[in-house]
Length: 313
Length: 216
Image 1 (cartoon, rainbow over the protein chains, first blue to last red):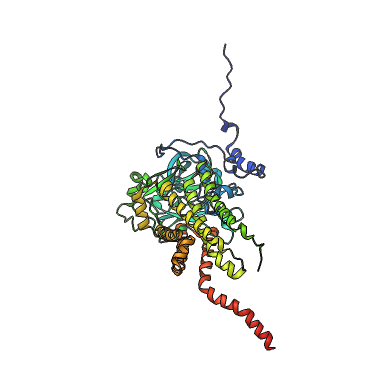
Image 2: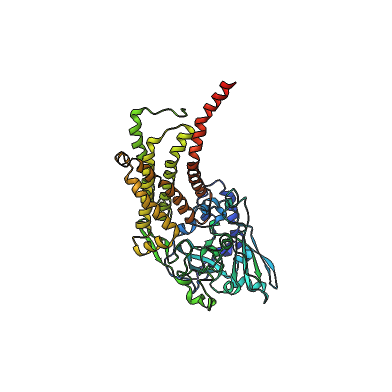
């Protein structure tokens, strides 16, 4: 006698994506009175993503470290500031304007970007300050977005811009402004099109916490972390090398390329080694040698063939 | 001038010892926090930086004793030795944590950093310069060295300048915290060349006022 078996129904079939995506907003309102410390993770929504051959199998940096030890000067300059001061930030609604030398300039709603073919990309992240992490990003290749706007042959570079919201980003107000806003970054078009270069919309299988650049950020794993611009509102294809924030702030110390390179020291400190956050402890710091192109030399070194990497730091 | 109640003379000694104890509390507390996971995900760097900042704070307090007496009439000269020694202890701890916990006694990289990194070179020079000051911070040395003691201890001025520079060169951008510390050191150093004229003016003021009064 046949037994009736109810069909298996995935959670995503029951709740439409845009509803659970707006959960963040709903929870944000509901949790307004709650302690902000846990806000970043409390508002996260789960993401489904395909595995990628570009992922490293190195030990992941604990999520707590990835979400509490951040450089995101829009929320303050201390490492703990972004997690503590980003509770008021509203990553939804959001859209990214893509313009410049493209055949089809347009604005992408975040819902549309979340529907791109998402992949798990576990990358090493090396900060210019001498520390590193291993972070499981969720995102899609930037080239997939660029394809949709059809870059013109004259486009040589891609520039990126972070949102300016002083009312939600306390680092953008007050007497001591460490940088000029908006934060801007740039890549050569071939760097932007490289399969390792992604736009991340999540980490650890969930949407990005505010402190990590919600709702969408760049990740370029072979460059120092400051190149991976957060909370992007605008992407432009341009002919000339674009302005970049840290280079504008101090061109002697921070270059346009900023490829991870143990042989080229920062003028004030060595780049030969790095401290892996989360490994080791108070009595056993995990220092390790820094690798050329952050260990992605096989994939990206050809982009810079014949270039003097000391001069083009 | 008595802006604050005077401490009975018999408590002076005890208050100095209390200052040593209270002054070392931040180091003990942060060490405990670091060892028990209370200093975040990069506890060594955090501990190292906190020790450096407290070294600057005690250096600032040491330099503030003289202007406080000149300008506000508060005489805390009896605490100056303790404040200066606390500054030295914090510099020594800051260096030790860098040497042992941060660099893991990797002497080749340490030597390279000291030679190649200006801010580390400056920090090292300051630490070394503080050693003779700490060793002669006792009454016997003061008696023994006489005038030379004052000359020697003027080394604190370049050390303070070096400490401020070391901090400035180690940070990525100048924010409120570093600015306040560096500005205080700058002000306290700027006071030194102004001190003689200021004291002369202060001494002359009541006299001049009297002269005006009597000539009327």
